[in-house]
Amino acid sequence: MKRIALLLLIFNFPFSIFHLAHAQDTLTIAMVGDVMMGTTFPSTMLPANQGSDLFRDAKDILRRADLAVGNLEGTLCDGGRSTKGNGPNSYSFRTPTSYAHLLREVGFDYLSMANNHANDFGMEGIQSTEHCLDSMGILYSGIAGRVESVVIERQGLRIGICAFGHNSYTLKHTDLETVGRIVDQLVKETDLVIVSFHGGAEGRTRNHLPQGSETFLGENRGSVRQLAHFCIDHGADVVYGHGPHVTRAIEVYKDRFIAYSLGNFCTPYNVNLTGISGYAPLVEIKIDHQGQFLSGQIYSMLQQRGVGPRKDRANSAALEMKSLSEADVPNSQARIDRTGVIRLK
Image (cartoon, rainbow, N blue to C red; front, top):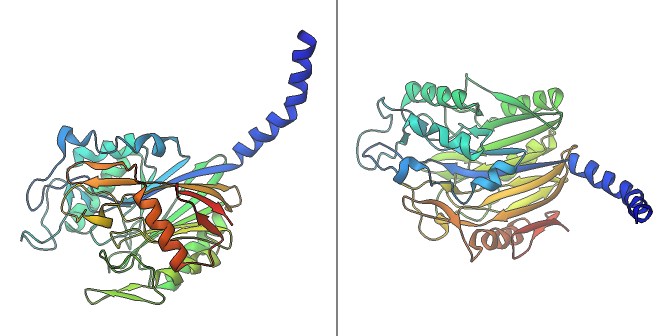
């Protein structure tokens, strides 16, 4: 019996080594859209139990990823004056600093600040947010004149991350000269590059990915299709977007992954969550150490006011992204099946 066991061990040894090496050459990235855990402005709207249940259904996926990223939609601060006025429709987001630990505990490694709510409470809000993220060991970037890009190490790889937005105080994605400069520098200095962007028009009717630039409230929100391709043409490996408050198509372009909008993820108050606005996808992808897309999975979740993302048995977000991807990027190198699995064609 011992000889048989030894022969089986020898026979399986190369197979095991192959799979171990394959696993070590695969990087798992979990990505989500907008995160705003609650606000104290213009009135107090905060979840039960100090927010401890917000990420209940998402934490295992985010924690197991080699890298978990998203967009911090708003500020982490306890005071300051709103830059958008004091009316009931000012839409200034001020999450208490005491909630910052939830972001670390659920597994976020990086959060973009390049969005139209990072400046809701001016420089006081920006500095408070940066201080909170620093204290939790969470990296961030995207505000002009502050942090342009960051580098994180995983599996012996240096991974560069940068973020762009459409507001004057952000690193603007419509300024392709600046985008190119930052991405080019990261490509030179790191092994892999991830780009985050906040762009595109907002609302339930803006789920399709248009050709050309988009305008919303008189503001140029950029051509996000052009932006994503531009970044990958310059050497980026993963591009993920947010901003429209609805999900959009995903694409694999030149073997690299793009999510054009991941919509809302954890926005329990002061954000419309009806219909498709409540879809909260969590996208997990696997790439090799050269940045090539291998496979992915869309985990469909739904939001309800005051609750946070919860698993959706109807798989609504994945089906929506499947439909949008087939319609808007038919030449993508990947396809989504009805269970949310993303495979190369």
